[in-house]
Amino acid sequence: MTEYFNEMFDGGRVRQPYSGLDGWMREMPAELRAMKQAEAEALFRRIGITFAVYGEGGDPDRLIPFDMFPRVFTQSEWRKLERGIKQRARALNAFLLDVYGRGEIVRAGRIPARLVYQNEAYERAVSGFIPPRGIYSHIVGIDLVRTGPDEFYVLEDNCRTPSGVSYMLENREIMMRMFPQLFRENRIEPVDGYPDALRRTLASVAPAKCDREPTIAILTPGHFNSAYYEHSFLADLMGVELVEGADLFVEGGFCWMRTTEGPKKVDVIYRRIDDAFIDPLCFRPDSMLGVPGLMDVYRSGGVTICSAPGAGVADDKAIYTFVPEMVRFYLGEEPLLENVPTWQCAKPDDLKYVLDHLPELVVKEVHGSGGYGMLVGPKATKEQIETFRIKIQDNPVNYIAQPTLALSTTPTFVEEGVAPRHVDLRPYCLVGEKVELVPGGLTRVALTEGSLVVNSSQGGGVKDTWVLAE
Image 1 (spheres, rainbow, N blue to C red):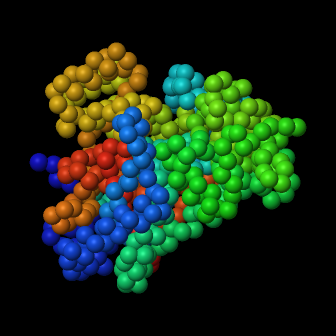
Image 2: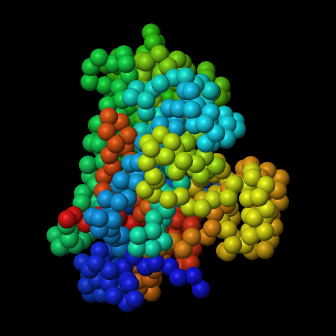
Image 3: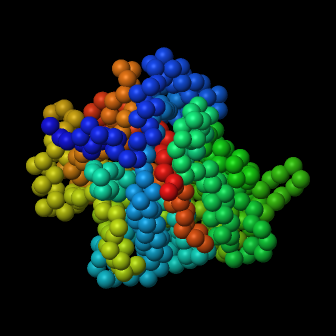
């Protein structure tokens, strides 16, 4: 049986980070716990925090399960993670600037050209363009897993539009409202500075033609999008406009927003729509979500798009295997955070190993996300394994494989009391004039006993993430 690192208990003893929660957990009667859980759900519902799951029929909006038991990191644990996350975000941005420019890392033979230039996320429309401050990915969500006291691994990088930060903020808000005494008894680093930091980051990459305080807007696909709540939530907290494509137009080399007082120039667009839909004149001509001509304005320095079109080539799962090499190549440093060992099915030797060991491995589509298009070998049926085997053989380039990691567990409230459940962590690193992140992130929890899949779309929940102050 696999041994999992329990973040609260070590051989029956409570680990130091959780010492302030042991009494709280033991003394909370079952009735109070049930009442508080119902209160949390009512708050989430009243605020409107739902998550859309498509393709299931009926009302796609559902409540993300919230677990009241916080996950805790010491200050020294967090400092180690913070240094590694910032290093990785810098390297990923250096890679993007390079591959849309001279491509030195490809010329040096460190990354195969086909993985970059034949990648469906590589946007030729921005080749040769240098965005403000040379930054392509302004909000980097780095998914981390833990397997031991000092063992952390990066599971994947999200360089386009990582979602979930609203849950990080709301989880904290609801915990502080329901358990104020916990925050009086434990010194916990705040996360509520994130909206100000995000606004500061976006303003710091204003375009060349902006000669005043930049006007910022969040571009959303609209209220049918699964993350629409987050779009409106962040716009509200930052004090910026939330717009859809139809609210914007291009004229005279600038992007304008329709308002009741007439057109207003927009300088920085935090886009929450995919590249393909940004501009129907440049990408998909049938897009109703974007702004015709926006890419011309972007390339001429009239507006900044965050994160930049084309940033997705850096978070492709086949490119992921080369991020440690990027750290060495661009920064001249050794990576502070390790990748999960990964087999690329495009390589004949790797493919053979993967096909021979499918029942032991996790196999993912290189462009997949949200827990879809994935095989968890140890949890799969023989039929599922054989179906996946055929998919891999038909298109090996489309898949990577990783060992089934022994993800750490944290205490989680379940019907019968408290039980360990597997977790991951997504911190949000902001890259602008400075590289910064708030102390915390989104902890996702696999609520089903034994499950390693934490994605909300696959039935996972969320919990507050604490970093203890010194």
